[in-house]
Length: 300
Image (cartoon, rainbow, N blue to C red):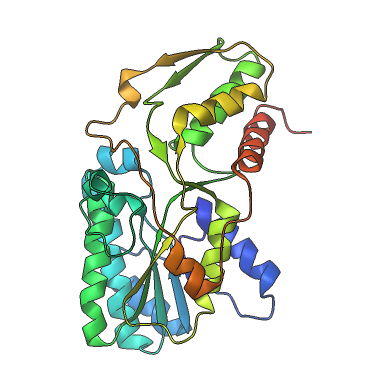
């Protein structure tokens, strides 16, 4: 069972599983995870052996704009799922997709961070994801077969422009189409982030679904193990156009208290899953830009 299968990562994950494991029954569930009765009914009806929990309010900006919704979905919706699994499918392995955002201020102390670094979130999104991560960890004592995955930033075709790379790519595509002046509005360009291609992230999730002999409540960082400046990403994208484009800072896009660098140690995931990212960042950026260029063309 996959929750959030209509979302960005969920669509890529469903495609990944259909391609790599066509014989495995895949149930894409449609229900409101904030409705405990609906969740209980869905889990009881399918009785999954594995549940990959991707559903959530996933953008920092969206959580900041609607924090009550973020808490209702990211924390309470997750608890609804876990309680339903314990009650109706107790042998199910619960794979919870958390976020590197939960580490927050811990990035200020040392880098790269491994899974033992304490959560110290700095925004509503990170706090709601950290609360769910910790609450699920406590439920291991009740018998929850939990694996927590903490992915770094990831992107690819189809991601919302609420995220930095598609935000850049969309503006570039509009400029190329003559629908925007040759100016790109940005937030901080000095921040450094660990970026992955969504297809590599889905490969890690698929490996996690197949993991045997998991430790109760185990945590794995899904990351590249290196960071890149946001400004360098923008330079690469602009370089793919051949245009002269001015860059301007937009105060509305700046985040108060933004962490200068997020950088994770993926050694444990590589050892446990036999996984490592394979898609170069430059290839990912070309794919995202191609997607947004295609959005500017009228349908045939």
